[in-house]
Length: 172
Image 1 (cartoon, rainbow, N blue to C red):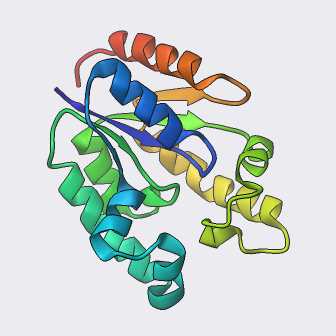
Image 2: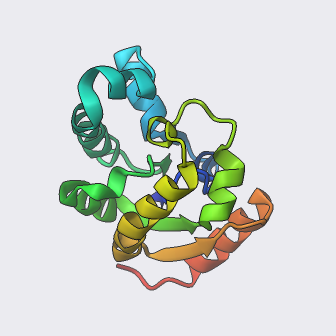
């Protein structure tokens, strides 16, 4: 069984949809950020503060390589996981990649009260999200087997669309 790997920006619903998808398929669910936190005993903002983004990205790269060696799971990745070439190769080679696309406006709504997002510690989080999307959207699309719109859609409907779209894909 191939892994199903969810990529997309913060607030796209990767964790929520990933859990539902895993339950529907009776597969284990992993979240790469949560795995890093469990392994280090520290939360992501603390890692960013102490090690900087570079230190976090090094940990993320190692964790993604380890997780993509496993088979038969649903994996939610961090929004910036696609920034490194090595990660994009790992993710694409690790299973079917599903890009959960959402608008910046929806991201703002979904992340407004979340204090666990180091990249949004700004006076203008909307601008930060637009800048991140400009860089990351082409990278998500580069490795995606399927692109799914999540704006204002119930997670269960998104899961059903993912399942339908995956069935229609030719083998890789």
